[in-house]
Image (cartoon, rainbow, N blue to C red; front, side, top):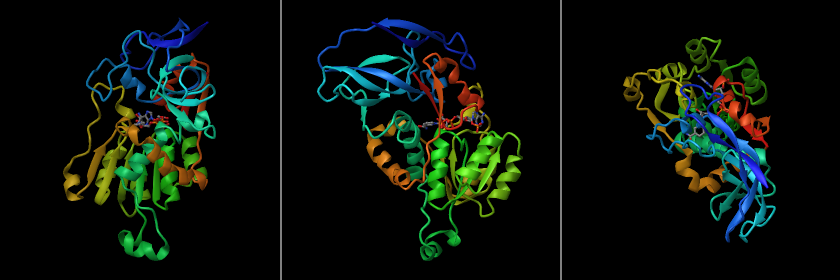
Length: 345
Ligand SMILES: NC(=O)c1ccc[n+]([C@@H]2O[C@H](COP(=O)([O-])OP(=O)(O)OC[C@H]3O[C@@H](n4cnc5c(N)ncnc54)[C@H](OP(=O)(O)O)[C@@H]3O)[C@@H](O)[C@H]2O)c1
């Protein structure tokens, strides 16, 4: 029996193109003791993939090697097993790669409860959701709005914190804004289309949504944040940074999660002046979720109350078939996805 996988054929110079990946057929190999075979049903497409197919060795994770199966998170079901901890039928997730099947060993993939489906396991309860929760809860330390009487004593001037979220209609950003709306913060969201802005306002309930492609970002942000900005969840880079740092309240916090606007440029855009960090005694912290995967269960447990109370809706953008992964990644850079981009095999 054979199966298909997509390997890295050539490092792209700019956007991923037709030459970047190639599909290869592999023969199934017999299992060794302790191993189990996984039929992969869903793949996750993530902005970080552009960095993974760059030969730069200085990032937080080594580049994918030429000829290697493309690195990717995925979800599948055990179809054959010589490991009693992963019986046939077990749902698993982790770094499957862009392949229809793989052989794994103990600890290489996480078991997913039967009550959680593939799309949820790759979105809200997967890497993007954990990233959102870590940045929002641990790094920004967002303060849940308390009862009316507590607000006056605990929150600045009795007002809720104001959070600005870029990439707000994406996999990570949409979870951040929904937690913040649920917690009673004033939420200002930036996204790149009218449809996304409408979804953020009408369905997710943000206080203000800005189309960074068509609105005057500085003016719109100023108008949307009359009490200044306490928290900034940065997913994209771009001009909003400058206004946010100028409008930061004392002891404001910035969580730098992603800078997708810079992933294809040789020279990153100039950052705001640091002078305001001193004036506002502000904190900026970059983070990568892979450093925190050992806390995955704890982080997922933090998201659960929002899910159980119906405060977070999971939105996925699903492409069909292994081949769709190759060009599909570029949708993340053009903004053609809304919510978590997934390939269903
Ligand atoms: N630090 C970590 O551990 C970690 C983990 C996961 C993700 N991330 C980062 O978090 C960010 C969001 O990731 P995601 O998985 O949730 O992706 P996503 O938001 O679902 O998809 C990417 C979105 O980025 C926006 N975008 C693309 N080019 C842009 C540009 N030049 N300027 C502004 N926005 C642009 C597009 O939305 P618009 O239509 O709104 O432009 C696109 O839909 C990415 O930067 C990613 O690298 C970091």
